[in-house]
Length: 95
Image 1 (cartoon, rainbow, N blue to C red):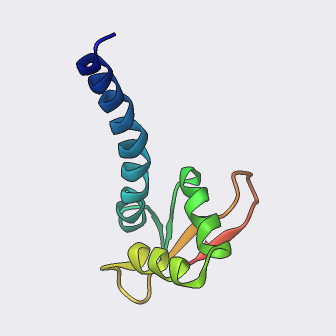
Image 2: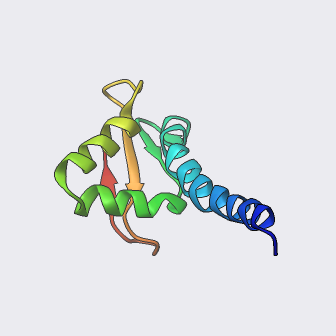
């Protein structure tokens, strides 16, 4: 395999390996802003439980960044419910 071909292959492997997780994290904010509204609580999909888990267990400034991003542009009276476990009845983080 030529060097140019290897370089192209590396690029096509690296882009999705970095891009897909980046898009997942970036989509968390809009999921919070447009989530399933129930009165004054926004329910976020269970697909985002890893982010809720990190917000509760990670270094404090990381949790603050996650909370700030989730609440960006929302009225004060609206809360965001983020799951912290993949299981039904698992933990919920209220932001």
